[in-house]
Length: 202
Image (cartoon, rainbow, N blue to C red; front, side, top):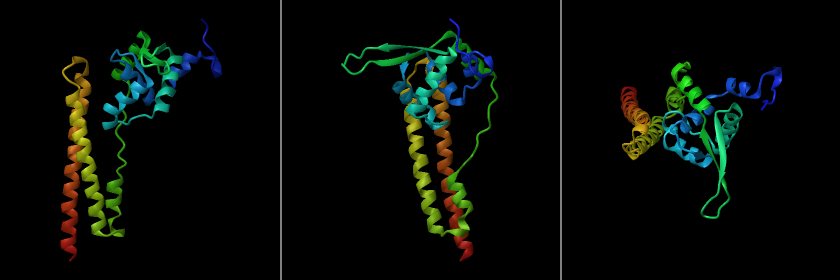
């Protein structure tokens, strides 16, 4: 079957492969564990793991990437009847070509350095425009958030069980657990530093 032509005369699938963004690779990566998943399933899996260290794409983003992956030949899909009588759902499975592509990407693609956009630190940087009690409130809320995320990452890592296929996602969740523990501890340190500045100022 001849593929549709994109601008410049290249096959549409080739253009999709070249234009695949990080979100597309993440969705393909979720499918690389071998499960046949719906868009809703992929959203749940992303919320279970990706959100702790990357981000969790919206449902609309996931379906947009699934369409792109389908055009690239990296996934196939079929409609499955629901036993509950609800509307039929479409499920997706990675193809051999998709598995080869995501394996190559994981092994060879350049790793972008993390970009730190830390709203709490920005507020701290502008501390001369606020009051110490406001900074303490901001830091206290951040500490609570970090501890909540740490506990959730810990619980999700434990919930992965002992399935060998999930060993590396478990490691990523353990990394997230340690990261949020460090954020919690940094907030504690900054609270102590703000208190020290107050004492020096008085």
